[in-house]
Amino acid sequence: MGETAAVRFRLGIPDTDLVRIFVIAALTICCILLETISLSQPISLVSTQLFFIPIIYAVYVFGHRGLYVAALCAIAYQTIGYFATYPNTDSLIAISSEAVLFVVIGVVLSFFFEKIREGEVRYRTIYEHSQLGILLFDLSTFSISHANQKLLAMLNYAPDEIAGKSLPDLLLTPREKERFLERIKKETTTSDFETRFATKTGASCWVNLSWDRIDESTISCTIININSRKLAEKLNNDNMLKYRTLAESTPTSILIVQDGAIRYTNPSFIAFLGYSMQESIGKDLGSFIEPEDHAHYRAFLEERSVKKLGTMTQVFRFVTKSRGTRIGTLLTTPIRHMDNPALLVNIIDITDKQHLEDQIRLDNERRRGVIVTVAHELRTPLQPILGYLNLLLSDPEGFGIQDDTKKILDRCLTSVDRERQIINQMLDLSVLESGKIQLARTDFPLAPLVKKVLEGGGYASRAEVTVDIDDAVVINADSDRLYNVLDSILTNAVNFSKAPRKVEVVYTSGTDDSEHLISIRDNGVGIAPDQINSVFEPFQLADGMTLSRKYDRLGLSLSIVKKILEMHGGTITVESVVNAGSTFTIHLPRGSAP
View 1 (cartoon, rainbow, N blue to C red):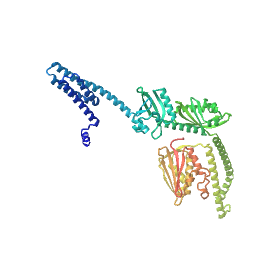
View 2 (cartoon, rainbow, N blue to C red):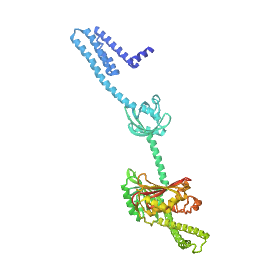
View 3 (cartoon, rainbow, N blue to C red):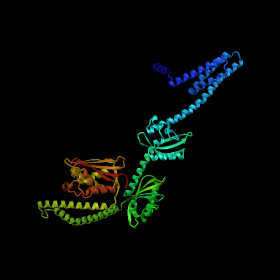
View 4 (cartoon, rainbow, N blue to C red):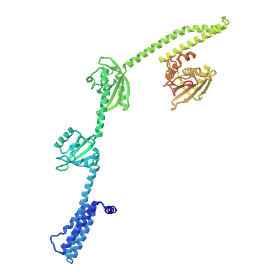
């Protein structure tokens, strides 16, 4: 056994081919012996056609290589015939013709067998390597005779486990077996039959079956695995259910508008306007909008038709069924509905918010009116008091004022002047909030303005002030208003700095060169992170009552600064570290008025 395996290994010939070669050799030798005996002993029962047996077999199993056997048989037959019939010319010619016929028959058969083999290999390759599952089963018993690797992998079966198994047994449920049997009894040729197979482990696998007859008793069935598609459809259906639930339960009105008409609306829109579903579907959305807003709505739709992508937002007034008015923010997004362009419309009810904003605006106007009235009423009696105090202090000896009395009057003058400044700030803030001030914008160099502020406030004598501003920097703004801004920020910087007081004024250009940045940095007490957002609000003191009293602050200067910068189209930001200092940065846009 070991020697046979070694010989087979050396020759590289499979066992099957060795057996075939042995059979062909035996048949060939038998034919040669029989033909030799037949020619030497006249036996009419032995025919030369016996040589076709090894030739046909060799060509069938070995293809064109079997022609060597045909040639060998032809040579052997011709050699034996020549020895037996020489010098009979007719016999020699007949024997040569028959020898040639052996080769011709071998060539013809080799050609046809190769074509048959190529077709068989082609279809077997398709069968074995197809991306579709393929099986053959008996029409009467439904017994599976063949199944390709794709189907075996699909159901996790081994070839011997599925062979002989009944096809209905592969179906998952009795109901699906019934459906299959009903279908195949009616139609022996069908396609797109969706059902579920059970894998070897019992798991469900959705498949699409198509079958057709091969012959009277055999059916070829093609199986497509649609499990992923079914799972995706289930997930999609689940998602659609979730989206519908979300749309039905959201407080925001959701509509689908197509060709100007409402195709879908959720319950929130019904509650928003009071119209029923039947009264809303098919109606033009514009018919629910306040007539005074119709022109505005048409302009919005025209802009929406131009802008194909993205979400557009606008506020409109809507008329309810009870003839009331509701205010809503309309958001539109292009979508496709039933394979046609449409708009997904969301309406956010802001009626209560709008009413609240209107009330707040009225309250603010009343507050400003009260502040202006109170400020005027307070400033009126302060004017004569300031006049009398200045008059007395201008000539204390002439009025017989002693030194102690003079000190008291000085304190009074300082307090009255502080009250006057507070009243002026209150008036300035009220006027700024009213929006009635017009800026007198001009182009001017920044460095001289900063120098003027420093000299006017005497800041250089109270702190070490460093200025880093190029003389070529020119700003377009209201110089008087910007003077007030810089003066207010520098006052805070100097007052809140710690000894030795250091203040820096630095100019930089924005990263995209679109704005001016003026930073004022101090080394003062700083601002706590939770108080930074409130320092620009009126009457808000980030440092609490202690520091506000210490530095005579009311909490209005930074509010005024912010309002002035917003009028310029700019803003102000602050960075601060407690006990390390703060940096206030003025942002002003380049160019002319916004």
